[in-house]
Length: 155
Length: 124
Image (tube, rainbow over all chains, first blue to last red):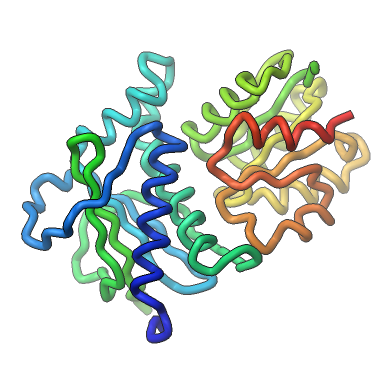
């Protein structure tokens, strides 16, 4: 039920959430850039997604090359013990916070937000819903794509 | 200010480390950090380490979420007095419920030393 969504506001809220959370959690700049639908999928080695159940049902997905994840882990942990073992966790937590920030920004304070746990996506296999917004970012030379879509449930 | 032993409950390693760093950067003296990945593990950790004096917990976790954990924590006379601070990306609209469950403060992620300082200010 996304008919009443304001796409312009959605894109603005999502862009703010991506930029703010990348800056505040990963200490890295994410600059919006022109979306190129034809961009090679080969660079999207990492795909993580989180489903929101309230206030709307939607999925936020981040795609990036593995080198961006490695850079974030290096910034956060360096050579700290446990960093290698847990490096896949960093982008999941960033996505989790990003989704909460985006929904709070779009719906305002007081909105009840319910999120599923973030997870890696290994195959789309027709599970992707309808895209609501697709935003591309330049993260200090590396690409990052944020896609907000409807959720296609399987029953 | 000496916080004693702090238990950080979050299913994300990244989040646990960021919270720990923010507590340290906020200038608190900490006797030691302990960690749990969900509410169930947190209860076991508290039983095993009775010197835990402050709890910082996420809400959205597998096995046992933060709200259930907080409810059990405050229902047990042995642990009811331990201050609990909620740190979560989904606290909008549910703050009053969390406070009524006994949360001392609610912090919206991303966490920062300033947010930690403000939240921990309520600990006597």
